[in-house]
Image (cartoon, rainbow, N blue to C red; front, side):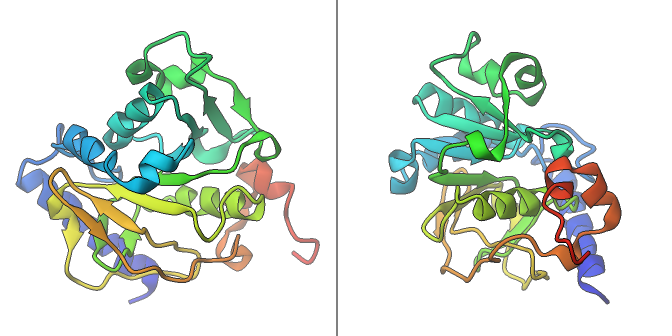
Length: 240
């Protein structure tokens, strides 16, 4: 079994488990970052981390499960970057600046609202990121995580690295339901990054630091994805 197939099988098991145990707000989580019960409590616990308290700039995924985290960041005056869907714009991030918002944080932090409310920015106009929040389907205590399978989180992270916005000290956190934390080994590829902390509604799990990818892994990007993401097309190595 190859890595991609093993990842998908692990995702399918987790999606089925979460629905069976009724710990998601709505059924139909297959193919998505699960909107888990207790996300508000996990966001609250996350704010006790020193890395959260010191971060002035946060990059977050746009999924509903991490909406309480994004809203809390804005309410605390943090600048939030959130990816444009599928990175399908030359300016691939929304910039949520709490000083400039015309709507409450909980509304502005919704991806559909952000589309009409806040500006898009290119990597060259972004500020260094102090904390990365990522959505997760399954994660183990080593920090190995599985997203929903589209690969955009890894690309966003790599682009930010190559642009000098993320360095080895930047902390990566995910918020999940306790059932999403597994004891088993999870498959990972060369382009995958691990998380430093896992936050559930009632626990913070510190993971050992692990070497991160140094940037984009071009031989693991297919032609369709490169073509459809403008910022990748513009960075394509001449040798390709």
